[in-house]
Image (tube, rainbow, N blue to C red; front, side):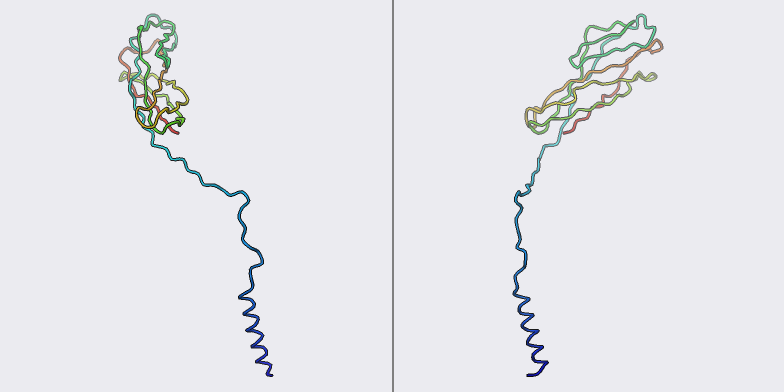
Amino acid sequence: MNFARILAATAVVTAAALTITPALAAPVSATTPATARAQIVKPLVLTATQSIDFGTILLTAVTASTAVSISQAGAITCGTGLTCSATGKQAIFNVAGSNNQTVKIATTAANITNGTTNLLFTPSAPATVLLTNSGAPGSNFNVGGAFAIDPATTDGVYTGNLIVTVDY
């Protein structure tokens, strides 16, 4: 027999053995499988349904900076040297989204102005509200706040925007 034929036959047998040899490690499944999860929620819709109103504030004997505040329930507190009207209104916002979701509420201080003088208004709101339905009618929450008046504060009607944002 020819050495070349023996070598060729050996190569064919070796190649055949390699192609039909099973893998040494068989595939295995995880003992605890991973899961996939996705929570789908509706977009939030925030609507102001009532604006905050401090009523009329009379500067009777202001000698130092003093605060005027309205609670989230609508109660007005007048600082020293001021007389406040008996009625006021807290702001009311409505937020709609997905049922049983907790919504975070954020507020930002902003100026209220009479056109020439600015007063820094600091809003007060709950940290969260729980949506008790999906979509309309949504859930309401109240916003109060405060600002300071000093002896140099000019008279006039002060207005500005409340900055309120919501997020899941």
